Length: 119
Image (cartoon, rainbow, N blue to C red; front, side, top):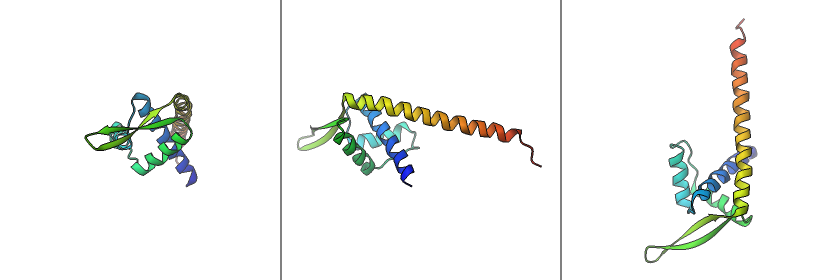
């Protein structure tokens, strides 16, 4: 189970940083963007996003700032820093290599299965 969580956490960081690389955002907006952009296939809880943003902020990859919305409400926005952009590039390459590798393996096994006879 730990490996699955690491995989999900890595994807969560990749998605958060990708969104922040386009524009500063707050947690609820990040959650909505992930659900919307994935066509409803991915749903990541606010708690998971908060945990990931806390980690990324502690590592100096993102920073937070408050913004007044309305008359009395403040919202915490996150901003990607240059170290976060570097990290995003790194984890994007890792993600792409992983997904391409899995796709290649499954395709090879699928082709291999077609050539076998059912004796």
